Length: 412
Length: 167
Image (cartoon, rainbow over the protein chains, first blue to last red):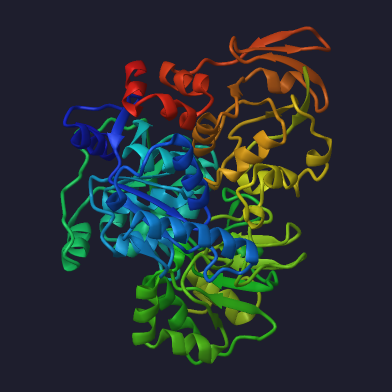
């Protein structure tokens, strides 16, 4: 009985669980990456306990791949030694953790997954409870196979209508965050539903749940349906239904996307959200399309369509980073990579790219970057004197074509 | 007794320590870059026993534990905010960085002022005015982790199931 979050914890514990309860549960998957695993190993070692179950652990190298400095290479070497010594089979170096976990079938409806990365909230697009934790919590799960949670109350986002041409799910989630605010959903599960979500492809659903943390949410959730089922079954992964059952939502927000327009989140807050018109014509120095928010095939498809047969100015840094090798291969097969390179964009190997500010497109003082990332905090992409603006892949591609912030509806 | 470093609302983990400085797990090295960009004087002027006082949603953003580690290694005795972002809140409890939640304190103090804090009793005394405010309490199972000095220390002597006794 209850919200998607309550249903997951109730199934997990085989009893009715309600929001506000504190529960200790078995963790189905514990994930961490090159940036957060070193401290998790330290925490495990400091407990004095052995690894509880290596088969429920996934380690992904994605943040700075391949390593871009002696320091990161050294830390990654430590993690590799741990992976080898403990015999961890689920080790990947082929894209962003959140994309790879979905592709490889670790994200199954009803599972409880913790990740040493705040965007672990992404997994709720498949009806799993995913939430970001720090490295010590990862270490706790390494040592015990369990962790504690306060079952969250739920904010429900009822989204109806159809997107106009040039308007995308990224514009919707920016609009939502602009309305709710950067701390408006702190500790809450953010459940998305309504006809717009029902008609949305899985890749686009991941864009919404990915950004739940940007309004403080503990996780983003979408009930399972035919879209979830066909995605999982087509890959031979198990499917279980997770749907709300007479839910009691703390708050319901209604959004109609019929009249939604392209949105921007301008520096330095994700809830600084304005229609693209407000900043149209502003010059940019870098355009970056990628990340766990918008580095999927659906996103690259938009950019490829807009870049086809066009030339980008080499004065602008245009960077494209597919979210995973699977996405990269698909983009190659569809001819997108050729289109990007013909246009003059730089296509980097799958991973987090410049979103972590350590490689593949670090910004200089005074640089303005228009990106499909999920955060625009000061200093995130490099210099703290630079500026980060967040937008949809269509707005990013339109902006790359002109070198100025451009409404994609004028280009499509 | 310690001095206050006062910050506003929504202080994010990139401000506490930018991602590009997370290239070490050494607490002292992380402390050198704590608030490196938003408050460059912090690491040079902070003294053991000082406090951070902030508004709403302190520690929002990334899950990086480098952020509370950097603060703890700076010698900060406690972070006292109106509210905390949830991952940061868990991380502080887990690593044994004391946090206190107080709606009241923020508007009563200025940067650089001195306060005296009794963590166990949740009392904060503002030295200049002599006024005392109280912080919110923690659930019992969280107190078990805090009392042990963090979850790693708790697990050294206990089974994780023992946390449930307090649930």
